[in-house]
Length: 226
Image (cartoon, rainbow, N blue to C red; front, top):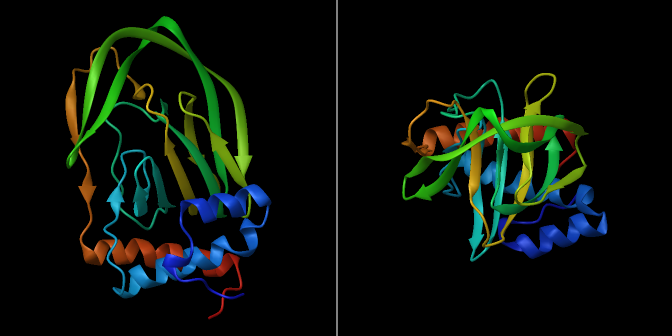
């Protein structure tokens, strides 16, 4: 398999490959080139410990569009959520699974008494997590499972949580498109106050370590050669 360099594929190219059904023959090689470059220190992309339990390598941000590599692994030290894993985005997500098995639990929120709704807003190096006056109930409705080579989409505003099956090792290419409507939302305890949560940006060594773990997982799944 030929290996594109990082600059060869951007949001529009990756989206096209997924939409055309050709992603499995191109995206893993592209992702491998990015991961190996970060692991070797040849490409500086600081990883971010995401509060939802994965590492994020932000590869591209162009206006309302963004491309990230998301990495889950018990080999890495991750951050935890101060609210819960049930959330919804203010942006449309399209993900391609590089390796591992991912389960998304999709549910519905209605006015109720069990959870408080929190708005999450990025603010520099931290997230402002604001308690709203709305109390809700949450009902899981559908489980969707995806494996290597498959893609899935989550429109803005859909409440869900994500579980990594089996070994807990997985990685995706995540494409985001802002919709300019609504906020990132999360469900939390009734008595939790508004607060801020730091975004932990990793140094070069930890970013390289996360990339190396993902590169190894990718190489174990695909025959990627230079």
